[in-house]
Length: 203
Image (cartoon, rainbow, N blue to C red):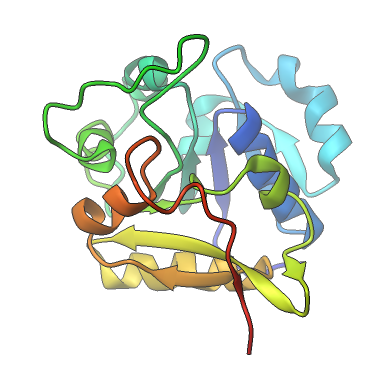
């Protein structure tokens, strides 16, 4: 069993479920939540693996590391009313675009992570897990003798070190892109140059 900090997931769509599957591959426990409550997630959680259990939003948000992956327009509702995160780590795995139109959201010059950070007061935000196709995120990260790359960005060195360690535990190669505003723009979809790339690190 993993010795990683406890993990919560808010959002059980493509990215949230893929992240849960990546954790389950390494038997890392996590609480998976959505807006409809744990009863709606029991079958999904059981299909992912025994280390993943369904919970409510508040349970997921109370963990040491919280990944948020929600449709952009639903983020305020998904995060409203939660207590201050008190220095805990929140992973921003969101992209400012959504079905069915897939039109870029007008962020008025800010990066999507800067907008997101305002919704999670007290959190150390790390941008990660948003740029890779969910199918690749949930599959074996070993590719052609190397490791598939996951990017991360953030302003707190300790938080980034923890997420880098988690990425490594999942079997991926983590690459730090720097600050939340600058590095986050590079992996932001649409607009950033990196989400369209599947990269493998050798050596």
